[in-house]
Image 1: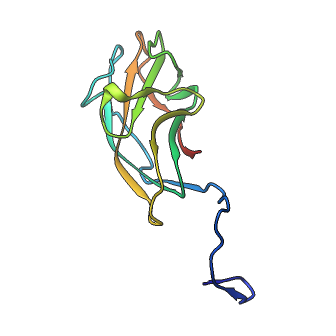
Image 2: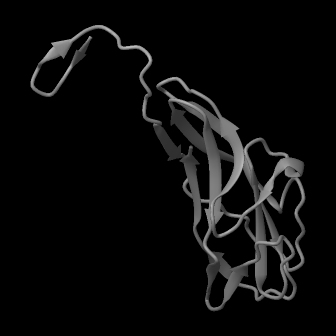
Image 3: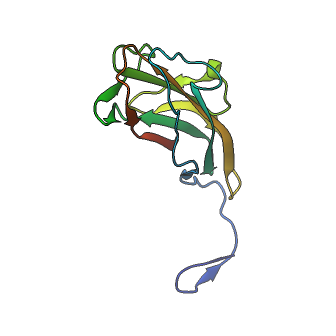
Length: 159
């Protein structure tokens, strides 16, 4: 039974119709902080390269892709900037990132400035699929100016 905004109701079903795809995402972890790291840091499971327990909830009525991207340039404080190296081999004042949903570096994708799929999912319940084991890995080039860098990561759900 369904009721619309003017209290009209209806019951029943219609078969053999195509439902529009619907996806919703909630990124429950607002910030990520690798702390103090040094130039030349390589991708590795565990601290200091890996940040774990990033919580994301996906709600979808069908098959979906979990995707991630990052800003190309991150600002430093008190000064400077670093650039995202999408090839995973950062040079001077560059960084690379990898992402995965289960904390395993071997299956991680290299983060780009365009969305990259790092996992897939299927139909969820109305409360969604809460994934709390998402991880990000950081790799730094050398030399890298010492500063506190800030940038933005983006997660999305896509068909």
